[in-house]
Amino acid sequence: MPLGMTGFGRATAEFEGNSVTVEAKSYNNRFLKVSLRLPDALSNQELELENLVRARLTRGSVYCAVTLGQAPMSGNYRLNLPLARRYYTELAALAQELKAAPPHISEVARLDGVVEALDSGSGPDDALVDAVKKALGRALDDLTLMRRKEGQALQADLEHRVRRVAEVAAEVDKRAPRIVQEYRDKLKSRLEQLLKGSGATLEEATLAREAALFADRCDITEETTRLRHHCSQFLKEIASEGAVGRKLDFIAQEMLRESNTIGSKANDAELASAVVEMKSEIERIKEQVQNLE
Image 1 (spheres, rainbow, N blue to C red):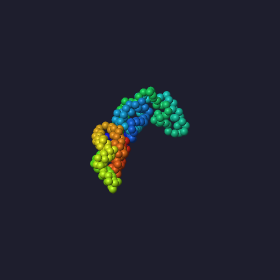
Image 2 (image 1 turned 45 degrees about the horizontal axis):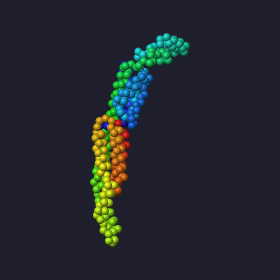
Image 3 (image 1 turned 60 degrees about the vertical axis):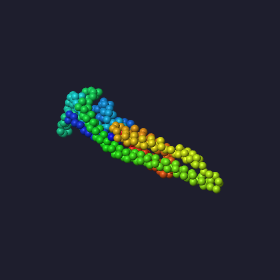
Image 4 (image 1 turned 120 degrees about the vertical axis):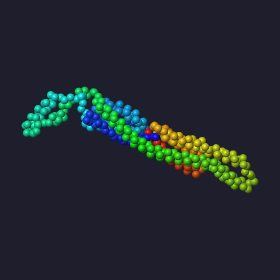
C-alpha cells in the first residue's frame, strides 16, 4: 500500500526526571530531504538521528524538532564553589545594606559561571540519547500512520481514474473500425456524385485501396494496446508495498504519450472527444502521483 508524503507526529519520552519531545513533519518532495533542529546538548548526534529518519522514509521534505524539558545536568558539569562563595558574600552584604532578605542558593546557582561544563566536547548522557531515539521513533510512527491514511485515499482516487482511462481506451477500440467503414461509405458517395453523368464507372479496387490507406494512417491498435497495458501495470504497482511514486509517475507519462498519439491519429469527432477525456484523467493522475512516496 503506498504512502502519502504529508504527515505529522509528536512524542515525548522521559529520562532521569527530565523529558524530551520530538515533533516530525513531512511535505511533498521528489527526493528525501531531512532537516533537524536540535538543542546544543545533542548537536553531535545530528548525523545518527538523520540516518534514523532516512531508514524509515524514502521521499519527502522531513523536518524534526527536538525539545528538552529542561537543560540536562549530568556528570559533565560542576559547581564553581569559589565563585559561588564570592557571589553569595557580595549579595548577602548588599542585602544587609538594603535590609532585604539574603540571597537563596538557587539564585546564586543561576549566575554566570557558577555551573560550568567539565568538557564541552563530550557527548550527551546515554539516557538522553536513548530517550531522543525513542521519542523520534514514536513521532515517526505517528507521521507514517498519517501518511498511510493519505496514501489510502490517493490510491482509491487513482485506481478509479486509471480504470476509467482503460474503459475509454476500450471504447476507442470499438469505435475505430467503424471510422474506416464510415470513411469508405462517404468516399464512395462523393465519388459517385462526381462521376454521375460522365459515363465513367467507380472501380471497387480504387475505392478499397483508398480506404486501406486511410485505415493505415488512422490505425491506433498498437497505441490502445499499450495504453491498456500501462493501465494494468499502474494498478499492479499501486497495490504493491514500498515507495512507488516515481514508478507510477513514469507509467503515467507513458500513458499520456500514447493518448497523445491516439489523438493525433483521430480523424473522427467522437474519437477526439474520447481522447480529451482520457488526457484529462491522465493529467490528474500525474498530479496525484506526485503526492505519493
